[in-house]
Figure 1 (cartoon, rainbow over the protein chains, first blue to last red):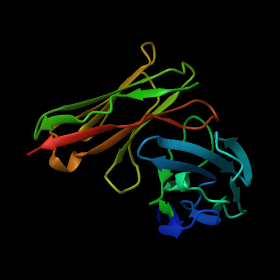
Figure 2: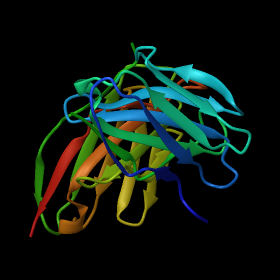
Figure 3: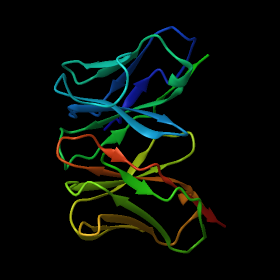
Figure 4: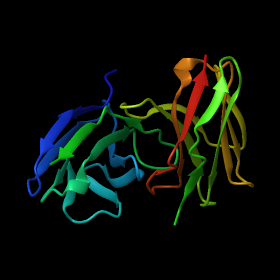
Length: 114
Length: 110
């Protein structure tokens, strides 16, 4: 069974631009969560989608948004990029939502903002 | 605020020894706990899940959960240099987001 895939793997943008990242979950998984990982802050939760609905949202500004499609694929968008948005963006998929749900991570998209 | 605390390390152990990684959590409602291994420059990889009090063994790995003490641990027996990585502990409560600790860096010395 194929794992979680993320595209692109690497991105270089300049301040003020916007970016869209894509995540395809493991086949059959309906929940997708997004995280930002930086050396200083560790893994920070961005949002979770389940059956095309945002179920949870982390403490990030409105410049960060996401969506999920009917095939469970998910995208996240960051508008008006800032230098501090440079990070590894990870998505993780799980079968559904709830307390007994293992999350499996994709390889991540490394975003560099210049 | 729900928190998961881990000692950042580095934790250094000789090859063949037992590595013990610890984690405490603040949310008494947390029901499930997970250990992830993350190599430098890579994404986290799930290595153990534990849902009830006691021990759970999988190969060289043993996860231990004590809900009364709000404590989770991961033991790695016969540690190998390939086990050198950052280990992330995470807790989950109902439909709320997974909460991660900042990780413990493990170094296994050959």
